[in-house]
Structure formats: C-alpha cells, structure tokens
Image (cartoon, rainbow, N blue to C red; front, top):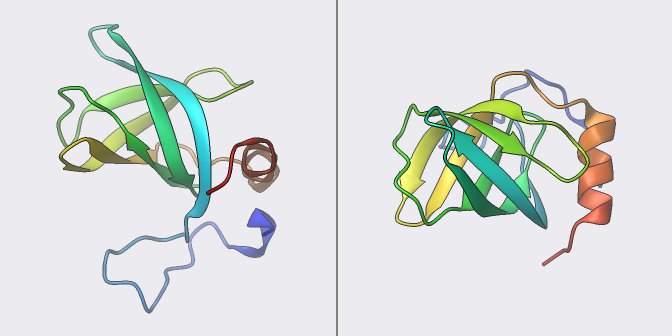
Length: 111
C-alpha cells in the first residue's frame, strides 16, 4: 500500500478514534527515549505518517514527550497519545514524509 495516497490532514469519517491517518501494519524494532534520557526497546506494530502503535513495557504516561528512533532515522519527537496496558499510541510532532513511511513499511516485518 502506498502511503502517498493519504493526505496529511484528511480525517477519516468512519473512524471513532479521531485518527487522521489509517495505520499500516508492520513490525519494527525501535528505541524510545523519554525526557530523563532513559532508553527503551520497543516494537512498532503499525504506523502512519502521523503516528504509531507500539508494544512498550515501560512506565510511560499519556502526554509524555518521547523520541522514537526508527531503523535508519534519527530520533523523532512524539507524544504518548494513549496507553492500554503494554501498548501505546504515539503521535509524531512532525509528520513523516510519505516516502519514508513507504520505505519503513517495505523493509519491516509484516503480520
């Protein structure tokens, strides 16, 4: 699926969760760092240009500012948007370029 087909700000009318972009399934190993510089290993489960869902077994709270380091990229600022047990949703402060998302999806493990 090509991420360029989705607009950065187009809301999805059929979604109840106010998500602006559909998420694409992928499994990526990544690192997450919080304000205290603690570094955690996480597993990205799906992504869009505006955010991600990840398995994170750490004490992160909604609203926390974090830096996510994806394979081949430097740290990207994000906020923890939600948390359900060991799964978090993150919102990138600056959207990914669609070509970057395409590259990550193509080179990550799929479901």
